[in-house]
Image 1 (tube, rainbow, N blue to C red):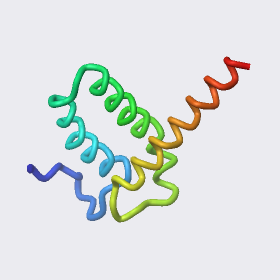
Image 2 (cartoon, rainbow, N blue to C red):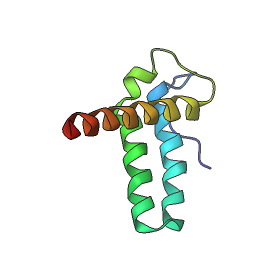
Image 3 (cartoon, helix red, strand yellow):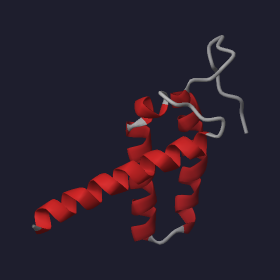
Image 4 (tube, rainbow, N blue to C red):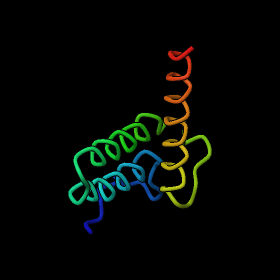
Length: 86
């Protein structure tokens, strides 16, 4: 894996780490059925969209932050669907 250019920074930002994690995890979509591929991409995109929130409490393992942000996205979708149902 190539080392990304961090422009003189010694510590990568949470956004940079999450982008690297995204780049690695998106490769999994090639082996998934179309619907699951779409679902995984949606979750990964949702995590990146919320990466600023993840930088408030940075973790040593970037995937922890990504998974938490994916859960936030899913919970928001469940709440939205429950509202529509009522």
